[in-house]
Image (cartoon, rainbow, N blue to C red; front, side):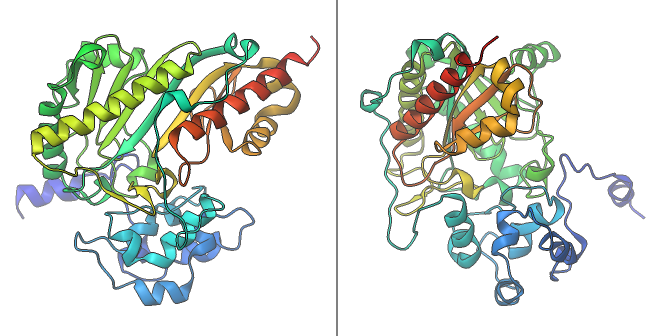
Length: 387
């Protein structure tokens, strides 16, 4: 037996990095775990949409990049607590497995009809018509707005390879050299950064480390850490993640509550990335997109703008009075979402993260307004609680 085979046999799969398929899905059979999931009161969107009839019809279909229905739903089958439960492997996934993704998209992006509606985009900061109240401004610790982009000439990372991810990193290294002014900075590759650089980036909460079981179950973290990296501007207010999930995660952030400033920087940064890509590749179109779904992303929740704007706001009295679930209920009623003190699925202490929920069918400036309106209401509720 070869050393290579022995080494492969000895490897213990890590659910936080390696793709581990459900036993039934690995054999391209209907997953028995999904039967159990569908009996529960709380189901992922995938479980609500997926049927045996759909499985039988599409189980043998493959996209040109090899994406299958089994791969698409593996996340939700192996992680029943998943909210969505399905991912795309390429742009073709959204048509090849149309009933699954149409059902998931329309259940998540409530009110969006894929047959009659088209996505719109507008990152003009001057169109934001709602101002952040002074009482809310004083409670905000930090503001962060990001958007996802995928390159049209590569498969999505869920279906990518070590080679495609490294090609993207090489390409983007050239794009970063085109950045000027406050967008200029340094690119760090996960495979070559020093221990001191890792510690510094972790301490500043900049560095992504993978370790997401739901993403791993869709192949996001395959061949970790190859092809991954982070770009940080000199003033540390403009960042980009490479191949964390989608090919590009463009991030604008700063301390405090100057939301227009953060959004304006994001718009300028997104334009600089697109222009740099066109310059380096000599292509007229560089992003994976469609008139109906907007920017194409691995996760259907990010379709459309691919944008999430968020603020961390200190509201200890409100947390104590109505709890995180109560705050999230208020946020959901205003097209927003509450997350834990350090992001999704994290513990709630004295602050929460408030972000826009909608992504598809609305321009970016509208989504920033969603967040501002919600933060104003949440802040007012905090102030109305007597000490």
